[in-house]
Image (tube, rainbow, N blue to C red; front, side, top):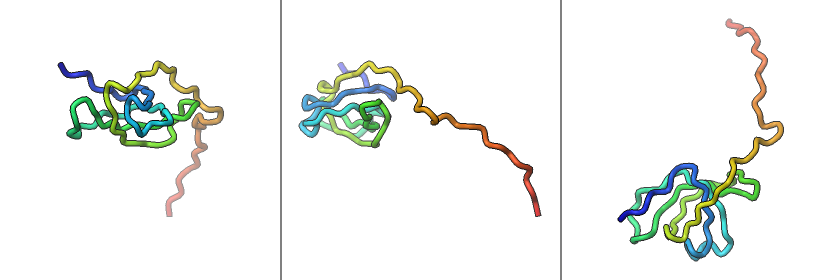
Length: 96
């Protein structure tokens, strides 16, 4: 029986149960599961590392033990104040 693949948008917590490299646990948002050949039960993830506010701070490729990855239920981060795009004033185009 094959385990389901991680999907884009999954938020997961990685600790030492996923790999010894995570002595300090991190939370990432999965971009995709890569199709690299690995040992049985291990997987490569392309993901964004998230800070405490849930904002992406770094893109990473991670080699983890599938059974050690913990799915996290999180709400999407609230938009930052002032991060909304404002309309741009358009002026007539001058040619020549």
